[in-house]
Length: 298
Ligand code: GTP
Ligand code: NA
Ligand code: MG
Image 1 (cartoon, rainbow, N blue to C red):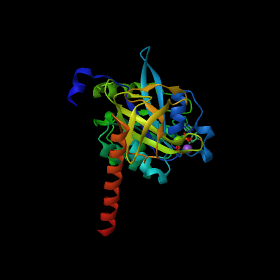
Image 2 (cartoon, rainbow, N blue to C red; image 1 turned 90 degrees about the horizontal axis):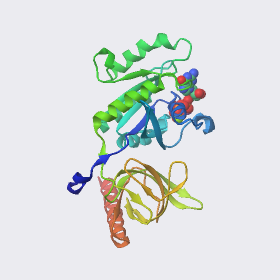
Image 3 (tube, rainbow, N blue to C red; image 1 turned 180 degrees about the vertical axis):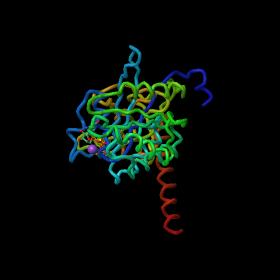
């Protein structure tokens, strides 16, 4: 928008981690966040999108970043697509011992169709025999549209161990360099808008949605419309479940106060009144219903 121009400020990069099942995405984020999410997952399988704000140490200073963890199981393609659409950079994890697999190829396709730069993390290099596989993995990547920088292409590739943390600092440095070139800006002073990355019904809280704020600042008390849902923001929670009053650009935040559960992937925006919000939500519901009728007829 025009009124944003006077007020553009740096915003943290959003980095989405994608790749084939069990190639080490959650373990990588655990190492970066010093957490232990992977060990607590049912069956060791990620089933939702996790969104985390992390302070990454670069050259002695802490840089705020937002990471999204996506599932690698083939059933969750929609989540990978959504993760790619809201991100600035895709980090695609490929286990050296397993190589390019179907969801690796799918992740590359999602990143390309979203037009975001790709960084490859060749993972599990601590494993015996992994180093003998690296040339082959790079070869497979280059035949799948990811030409390594080292071979004259434009895709940075970093060999890491998410388990031991080996070279993870190199990976983060590479990501920050790519982010710097993007000159990511937003206007924190405008009404917030962004995208729903997850939503559901909580027994005690009611409809709950996790948003990524893409522009502006979302505040407690704001009136929002979000697909066919609307409402006044009753409470905001950060990625640690702590109550907060505001969420600025790039920040993931859980929101309660919507009248219904929105669809993941829906866009949200702040509007001036509940009447406007209700009207917009109804218009959206009608147009979706018409689309469904047309789809059925056609
Ligand atoms: P999904 O989210 O279910 O697709 O899996 P993921 O990609 O998040 O993989 P996850 O982090 O759950 O790791 C899968 C398994 O690989 C776990 O047993 C990890 O401990 C192991 N693993 C991950 N990274 C490494 C690594 O660098 N080295 C070794 N040796 N094992 C690793
Ligand atoms: Na897993
Ligand atoms: Mg995982």
